[in-house]
Image 1 (tube, rainbow, N blue to C red):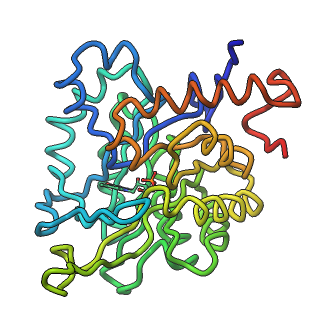
Image 2 (cartoon, rainbow, N blue to C red):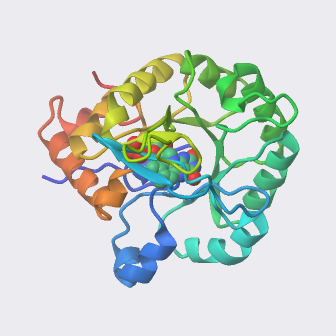
Image 3 (spheres, rainbow, N blue to C red):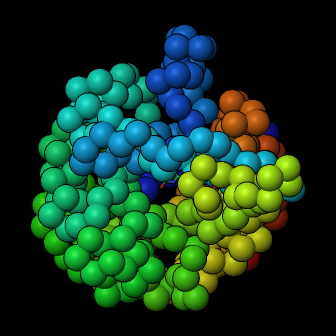
Length: 307
Ligand SMILES: Cc1cc2nc3c(=O)[nH]c(=O)nc-3n(C[C@H](O)[C@H](O)[C@H](O)COP(=O)(O)O)c2cc1C
């Protein structure tokens, strides 16, 4: 049985609710490897870029990845070409993908965030912006996404700059993610996405030194799924704007769990490294689950929880 999963997210028509998590699927490299086959059967209904910053960044010293039971810790450190490099080199290639493009941006002040949001949203190829707020504000020293007030101030500065959807990517490293989500919504965010990685460390057994070059990193993968599901549920209960759920999604069963918890879209992250076709597989498994679900698929509205 086929199930029509077409949906609308912040006014953007999407073929289905499975997208990628920022930084976990390099569409440009994948196109080099898989050629036109990638474009013809793209695994996601929208593509979220890895986070870009105003200036180029080299990223953190190696090692940058450490495997854990049921997950991994990364301390990649957002290496990227900066805004100008992204617009010149990456955007034209990402614009050839057959799905709407969401550009993820991060900065350390409202002024720099404004430069990024203006710079990317004036391009027709960009459908929406995801604000990665897991970063300190140089003026206050506080991590923006850990503070409802800082998050609201940032949104108030950015909202007038564009009519395109602004998605706030929430950090899980807070006691009350719903308070940050409510602040984002109140200041004009169109959607929230969660969760980003959980703060994590590992020790190299050979040296008893930190395993990662940066000393610490962020945990992702199935290890964080139950935490993510809880935060998606709490945030979905607190806001009326759509929620993008992610954290350890490896299958259609996981995706349906996030939808049942209130997510309108589900993002696949770490699983893409294990299985580059994970997005396609998660979608087909989700369709199978929905075809077997009661109430019947026709009664399901993916923008409404149905539990
Ligand atoms: C290697 C790696 C790189 C990531 N890069 C970014 C990034 O550039 N921007 C961002 O907002 N999140 C980034 N993330 C976080 C993911 O988008 C996602 O929020 C998190 O990994 C949880 O989902 P998962 O468990 O399915 O991976 C990265 C995660 C990993 C594992």
